[in-house]
Image (cartoon, rainbow, N blue to C red; front, side):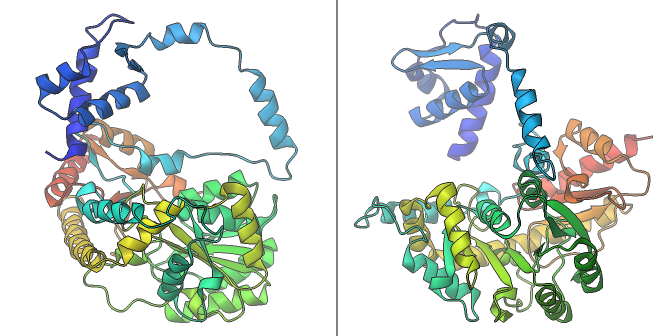
Length: 478
């Protein structure tokens, strides 16, 4: 059995058994659990760690695992944290635009569905699609490299910077690249570098909730620019620059999240021209270039490859095509802004751990890497087509205006008057997790939407069953 599923199954069985023990009572020894459930010691250790993280058990090194005291009892001995409300509100009052840290939209896609729930909410490849064996082998080879535990250059290992630069193309060289710890970290660095607190930042509407959370946490004011099937609308972008005085726009020109749109060729030129005339930067979040589908034609080059003037700050990542834990990405920029990006990254994180960078080099340089990308491209097309056909057959009232040839999800508009939150809650009760559309809008949404991922499930059978459950939920609604 797959190790990950073994851990989940054992944790589920132990959750039920823990209830039979009194608070503070010792659970059976790990060796007894190994023999009883016929699993490895590692599986037992990980399952107990999962229960400990949930607050159900307490593990004591050298002694064993014990049922945890009820949370209510622990709460009675907790200190008084009410002072934090004053401290945090004072922090907000000091800002021109109050900072708010709302991770709910991100957590919608990071939350692991409970056992038996089909996860249409996921933002990463299902474990069966991840190159686990290739990543493990790469990590093993990297661990044998001389100096792998030495401090890397703060900009990143030169060979990895060169690899990202080659993938970007244009005039970008290794000297223009910084290695960062995942796309979210890269976006955080870019927004902090390019806009002061209180400044407006132009964003696509709808757009990635994690980017909106970054902007608001930094005290920035997201200003929406509508997107259609051809990407951001240039005329509205120009209007937004004039009205807001913004000096920064964030966009995803390729397989935009959540619409899947690809910025049309004529709009690419216009976006760069408008930003240049406004004296503004464009942050290009090129997050799923490596999750192209098998039937996609040639991809447009990154915007930064067509930008000779340093307007574009480019973000590229390996995470989406590998694993959520393989957090290796790159920032690319030209001109004085590169030093500011570098300085902020050093202050925030120092550098990305060298073993992870070396493992990334081993992975992308191995024959397994192109095989993995081809396999994922074929499987994503099958899953996309399966979900599209199932929605059209069983849920025709959902409008899917654009079927992308890359990425990992569909963006569906709900019928007018639908209570989005109620539908999402009902779907979860029926055993399917879906991502609500509201967090993808920086302002009032024009309608209720859902984002449905086809990459985070086990296969086409789960897609068909998930759509069937959604049909049942819709039929039961008044």
